[in-house]
Image (cartoon, rainbow, N blue to C red; front, side, top):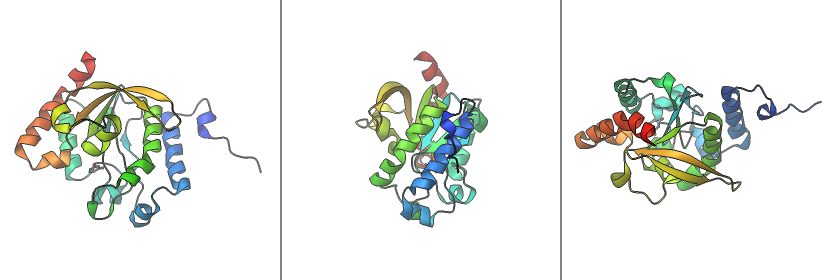
Length: 207
Ligand code: URA
């Protein structure tokens, strides 16, 4: 039997083909088997693989697990509203999470779970090659800005060299924002997030 050529070696593979390959690799490598055993779906991402902006959240919740799509619950509704207020919708951006299976009872993802998914997130970034990475909350911010405090850096864009497991480096433009779920029911934080969010296109343009 001939071995199937990896999609990434095919010159005409689309970004979606390559993202599908990442999904297959996560399944084949049995990443975070404890989470996988309890989850209904592996939640890879949603939106446009050719987008200039990628949003990275924390991990799927109940609704996301059921539908297999990121940010489709209350936090997702808030995210959609902010996108609309900024003149965009989900098909203009790409949305994903660090951890791609729902943690039981929506607990915080464990450091080892985030580490396990990081190479796959790094590969998603390489494929999509966005102009800017918007992190939502501290779990995704810490991969790019490990020493930053969200209360000090939210809404500001920074260029940052990120080192990968194979020791290659990539410079990304990072805009850290508060997590929509944290801001949803907190009046002050909610307005801060909305203001930061509406500013994202301007902040990106400036750099
Ligand atoms: N919160 C996240 O961080 N991601 C989701 O997909 C949904 C809620």
